[in-house]
Image (cartoon, rainbow, N blue to C red; front, side, top):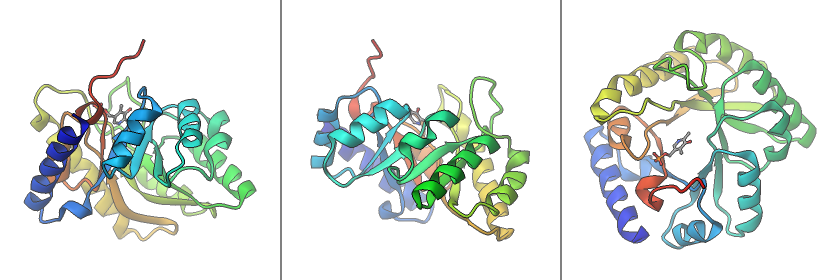
Length: 229
Ligand SMILES: *Cc1c(COP(=O)(O)O)cnc(C)c1O
């Protein structure tokens, strides 16, 4: 079951990558394992998945402890400042950096543990009240703040696009994030290398890849519908 889902996703990734002049290998599939048990992660690892995304600190830490294989852990959900200390040194990438306060705490805790933390700036492109993320027009100010932080590296941008019936409706959102990353890269800020664009979920990831996504975050299309009870 999961095998077929994964093959179908990989096929879609390949087609979308080729449409945008890239290869399948240029796109990282992040298996979003939130709410699923460690056994589902084990099954995905056996099928070749190497990157996993979680949106809650406690669940992320528990899963990191219960999985022995060396996989890449991605924090993709809203991160509270007081919880930063629990994940520093354990994640490949924190996708959801959305405030200066959070950036400063990541710098502080990374310095303390003597590690460099890789992050993405989360941008609320569609300006939805229900979503976190900075605004497009704030991004350059954030970049100049990041350039002064010794233990933080910004690897690119992330967005959570609106839920839409027709994935084409998010094309412009993805394009705006891509354009912003090109503009930011031109500025040559210290500590910033815009090589990651984390955008696209189960519902719209092929559109995101066509518009330049390098990482897609996929939960339900791989693991099936989530049960929150
Ligand atoms: C849950 C989640 C996903 C995956 O969503 P699906 O629609 O299940 O693919 C992606 N990104 C973030 C930030 C999430 O919280």
